[in-house]
Image 1 (cartoon, rainbow, N blue to C red):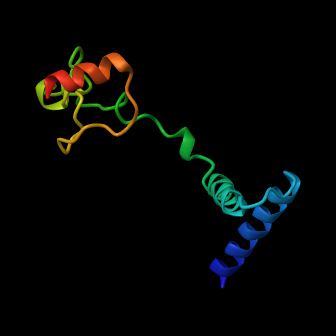
Image 2 (cartoon, one colour; image 1 turned 180 degrees about the horizontal axis):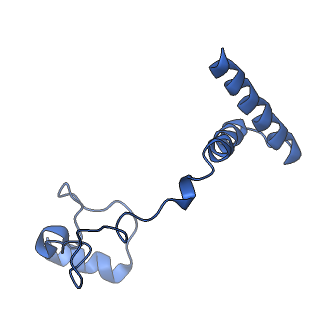
Length: 106
């Protein structure tokens, strides 16, 4: 029963916020989500005050990097080209000079 009362309170708050903003069409879901977030903040006020676990980690050696380095070659990805990832040409319009270059490359 407590869950039903909580949902009803959140729904009423969303309705009130929606009306205060002029009852914009098609945006009730946004106000419902906003009301849920506000209820969560009110129910857990100290959550934002917790220490950052990365900066407060006791086993971290002084001078050691806090995050391991990324494998750069693996994360670079592909460079853009005239072809998309499926090997076909882009469908959006090109400038004349780019179109001429693309035709010469075929």
